Length: 139
Image (cartoon, rainbow, N blue to C red; front, side, top):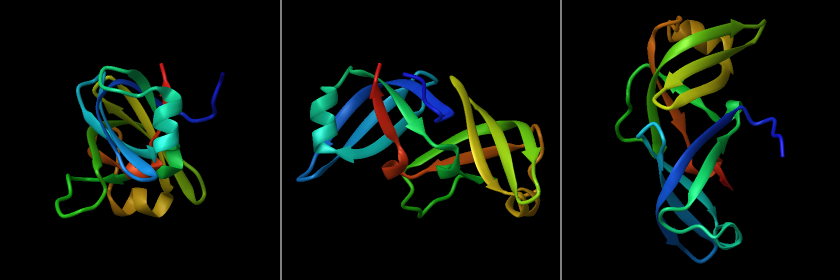
């Protein structure tokens, strides 16, 4: 299956915490970062997820925000540090490619945000991803 989701990071499940309807799944990405996904319990069962399961974390580029530093006191569980390797500016939006250990992420943010944050190729950023925006696919 080919997907339009640009951000596909391979990793290994380290922990599954099921709830009534939703579960949190912690992964260790191949680049060494930890990532959390919040998915349905039904999806956990259908994918057969358990510790040591190989998965791909999938995140739409429109669901990634960027910050110039790590942020404390924030409910967003996933903060992946990296460096900008490419910026494509449009009239209203920008596509920003970020190199992270083990791969690349693409974030689509407003052109204004790109300018307000002073982003440029080579600048350090932190990719912010809500756990509820991470989908998982079995590897």
